[in-house]
Every structure is written in structure tokens, then in C-alpha cells.
Image 1: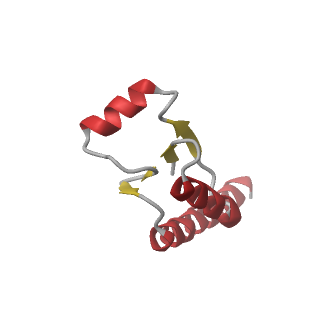
Image 2: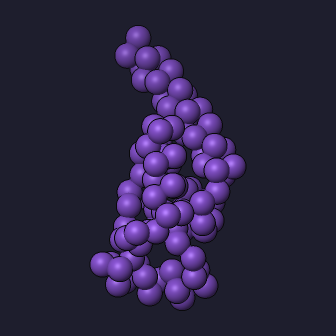
Length: 92
């Protein structure tokens, strides 16, 4: 699953979100919407007005959401575990 965090500089909620993802070992791609004007325009057109905007598979949310980040980490762990088992089965 691809996780994208659309953020802005000096955004406390953005920083908290990225710190928690880092602590939980969830890989993500960060996009600074003050630099990427296309991403900024896309988010505004979709109605998002608060940073960060987190897109994770079929889930999208704004702001610092520890509850959703924990769920995301659990889902990431399950997917990683399943991928490891599949790789081991293929190698055998």
C-alpha cells in the first residue's frame, strides 16, 4: 500500500503525523504542497483545506489522527507479514 503525506513546512500536525509514521515503521512519500503546486491545486479542488492530507490506499484523512495512523500501521504490518509468507512459499 502506498502512503502519501501532503504537508506544509512548520506544520505541527504534519510533523506529528510523519514522526508517528516513522516510529511505527510505515514507509510514506512526503509531498510539500508549498512546492508542488499541482498537488496543492488537486487537494484544493477536492475540498481539502487542512494539512496534512494523508492518502493510504482507499483511505484519506486530514489533520493529525493517531487513531487512523495506528490502524494504518496495523494494516501495514499485516500486509508485510503476508508478503513475507508469500515470498517464503515461493522460495521453497
